[in-house]
Image (cartoon, rainbow, N blue to C red; front, side, top):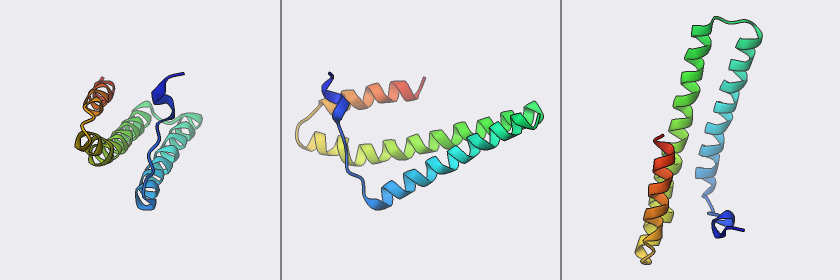
Length: 97
C-alpha cells in the first residue's frame, strides 16, 4: 500500500463549510444538467450549463490549491521538506491537462 494513501489534513470549520457548499452547488448544477437532458433541452443550453460546472470545479480546485499552498506546502518547506514542491508540481500538471 502506498504511503500517500492515508495522508490527511484537518480543516477549519469555516474552510470545510466553504468547500462543502461549493461541492453542493456543483452537485446541484450537475443534477440540473441531467434534468435538462431528460426534458430534451436544446444542446447549446446544456453545453452552457456544462461550461458553468467546469468553471465551478475549477474555482473549487483553486480554493483547495490555495489552502494547500498556505498550509501543507508552507509548513513542509519551513521544516525542510522539499518533497512538498514535487507533490505540488505533480498536482499542477494534473490540473492543467
